[in-house]
Length: 205
Length: 205
Image (cartoon, rainbow over all chains, first blue to last red; front, top):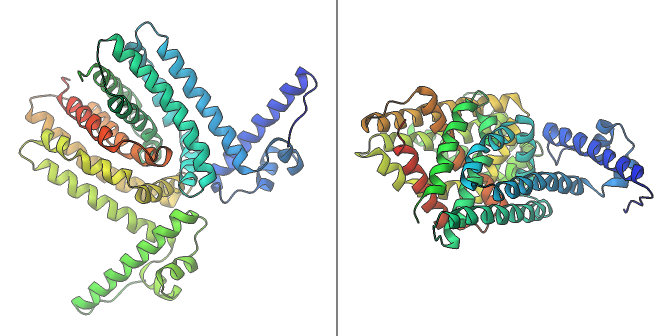
């Protein structure tokens, strides 16, 4: 269903509604799982009619697509900022704390795990998640390539891809860690991650 | 419900049944999620009556506990073997491939993600998962401590805990990677992981 926007205040009202629906849906997905959540429950949690929900989102998959798009935008902003730093390696080491904090946040982690668990059985969700992942990997690969070339290293594309996977695995793995070990020492994790990122980006090919 | 075992063949028949139920339940959890799976569906998938299922497992949580216990046993066997290697660091680098292959297996990954997503909202499952995680962390910490002390390094307990979390995050993160990027280059990941484990365990405090 398309939304006709006549003037800026209407556009901003529409965005506010989408944010409200996204937050309500995220709560429902976390609590009951994607499968166990109905549009009726999301409408109740958002305090809107189901008609209103359908005005903005065709179905539950469309809400997931919106959540995934938000997360991708955050990742692309970060990798773009890292790429334009005067010392990319220092910036990646320095800003590791942001990635650790973001991925250890239990409510964000629970939602992301629910989305990936659903992607493992739902081809439509899998398609959404994989397209976003590809865009994120490409941007991180560009960032690493720039850093490595500036440092005079000649890596194969397979090595760059391996580095990208290992870096993303470390950070995404924290989403599992925060559920399995809610008492983990965040400061100690940041310290070890910083050393590992530094060493990874300093490797001779 | 307790099971009375009179002789070995009965014990082995009981174990065979448990293995069958576990496998059927794992398939159901992967396909429909923990929440969306009933004991009736597990009984149908296992080709047994529901009474039979209840003879071996009190409820769905008990089946999850059994799956988690199996996974823990596998981890403890590995960390114990690593600990008794003549060169612990070399053994951890060498055997990284086993952890990569195990965690990248999509059906195992899907099940593990389902369990941790459920743990994020179900306090009983969370308790099971966290107890197993604690045992796994303790064993890996012992392994790393032995390696580091043998190499003459004096680490704080926080550093050891940070190393444990980082190592587990890398490997568990692969469960998410295999869903988000099913085409990832496994050989490249193994190569980068080996270097990272080597560098992590070689760090000066």
